[in-house]
Image (tube, rainbow, N blue to C red; front, top):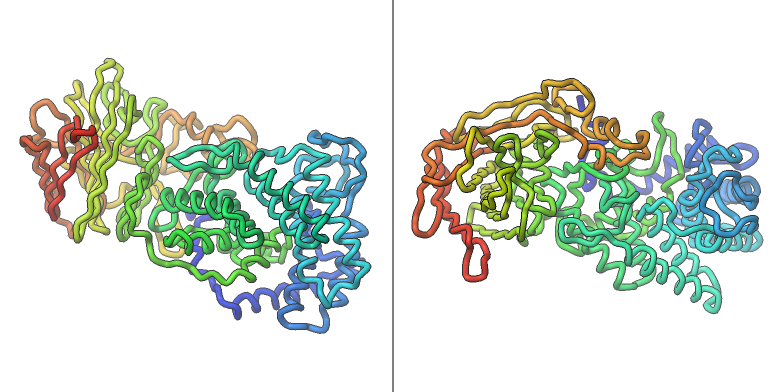
Length: 612
């Protein structure tokens, strides 16, 4: 079973002017064949996300004409633009729309679905999208659109902006991508207006960004992020927000968009595995976007000097939104236009700077959460998620059914690199059911193909074990597929793969056919597509899990666990542990490390010595 939306890396998609011209040529042929006598360019099978789509294809035709001067296009643009202005501009309130601040304003808006009152909740983002399509057509109108149509479109675009910012509450779905998109629409609209009229629009757009978006950012893993559907980050919409920030910076030159885009880009870089896999979000867990993310990841990847294009996409939507049958859909046309207009090239090399919330080298990577507990481990082509036991999720020692990974104080990190190795030592104070404070020291070492994990903690009673991950997916190169196999893993103590004893929805068995996202939605409070899968997943009681018993030969007073992900040339895994005046010495087939005393140096910071 392949993960439906986890396909190839974005930077592997064709990205040349010739490739984009080929895309536009395909759009032109589909559009001319589809164009109805009324001028409609909507896909005949579409029934939602529809109020802006014909105008979106019109904007693509305008771009194609500017690049190639196809003589068939002026008439098609005129007819399709007339259709939108005549049939898709609504001024009467949509019955049931709950977010109005002014009733019967008479201002234009776009509908999510065309039937009156059928699904009005989506009208705000649909109007943002329509505004973006409109300003793109205005940008491309010279020599193509007559003065009368252009004036009418400009009037409608101003009305869209006023409806979004005056007649309704701003950002009613708490969706960062929609809100930043609205700001971009205002900035682009301001450029089309005479300066006395455009400057107030520009000022208002910047105020909305500062007061309504930036002031409400959510902190995760040390970064401040535009909130997405009530959460800090969504792996579908987060990169789309990054694309909006890129466009906002491109057209306004305002440094605030560059600063916030850099921060979001570094956050994405840290949470993303080297192989481009990621999951998690308050709207979708695994439904990765595709071309909608190219602009932001490419633009800010170049700015921060990292290979953000490794991000896995759904390449079925690699160039422009299409339906299941492959038919062109103009809903995200504005992003394709900006992507073509921007000349930034992909930065393809990883950043070499150590990152607090990630360890990465070669084909090995570990992404950490805010508590410095692994969220995804990638090694030997297998991706491991945090496992669950007794309602607790994470990666760490389990004693008497209690998982020791949540800190009760400051978490400290030390990064060390040698000529061939990269290592991260994480120390955190933890408390178990016995209320005893212990110091958990977790050492992660990689040579780029193998990951060694050593976890040491003051002696644990009973029969403790290390919860060492939920094997979830493997990399097939072009696709990511589900797995229930432990991968290439060795342990210094006995190692086992366990599965939940219950088949209930709140127990996730990796051998089942459902994905993590489907399981998370099943546990969410609201229906699929509206519920928070991150919140639903937190309701999980137990999961498939790798469990490693303590390593033999640990110094007195310590419980030590050691796991190796990846074969290291199929060498035997028999690490040796020794208490020394400098700390705990760990000797493996590839390195020797000394993990300093839990008290740390003179400032309490962890000490680590690494020899390859």
